[in-house]
Image (cartoon, rainbow, N blue to C red):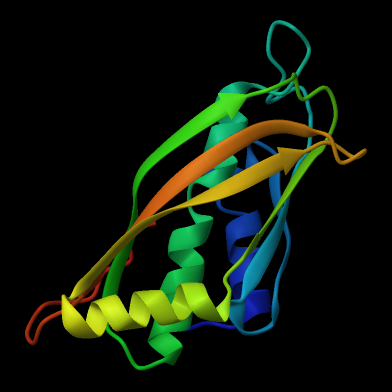
Length: 161
C-alpha cells in the first residue's frame, strides 16, 4: 500500500509494539529515502540496570529497511514482498538516555535492488545501523538483512514488516 510519509509516520507512532516501547518516528525523509527514529527511555522500557532494555533497541530497528524499500519499490512500479530476513545486534554501552538512529536509502542501494529484482526476481542484502545517544556516542550496532521478492502474476502482495 502506497501512503504518504506523514500518514505512515503517525500510523507507526501509534502502532502498539512501537508506542508501548516508546519508539518514535521523528520523520520519514522525502520520498521515503530515509527515516529518523528516537527511542525514549521510560518506565516501560527500562531494564534492571536502569538503561533501555536491549529488546526495545532491537525492536526499534526491525521494520524500517523493509518499510523504506517497500515504499520506494512500489513507487517504481514493482509489486514486491519485503521483510527482514535476519538481524544481529551488538550492545557497546548501556543506553542510559534517549537513543537515536537514522537510515538512508541511497540511489546505489535502490538501483542494486532494482537490478536484482529484474534479473533474478529477489534481492537479499544486509545493512548496518548505529544507535547513538544524544552526544553521538554509539551504544549499539545492528545488521539488518532485508529480503525482497518480485511477485509473479497471480500472487497477492502482502506487507510483511
